[in-house]
Length: 63
Image: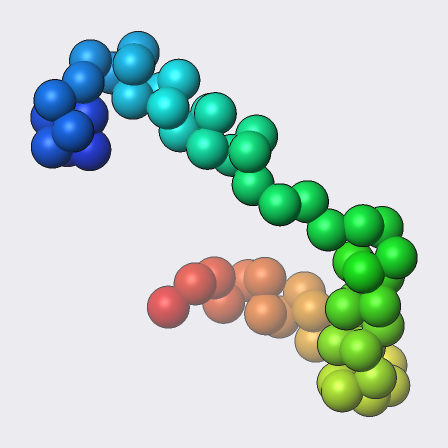
């Protein structure tokens, strides 16, 4: 609502502008996305997650 007011548009017009901007955005190829994912995985390294550890994190919730 604030963005629509700032731009002097109705909510509907602002939604259309945002959707059009998203559709016009450059889309990476599947190969580029996979290369990025693989690079991230390599930078993190292998890690075996303990299911009990994951459950404990979920119970803690967000800070």
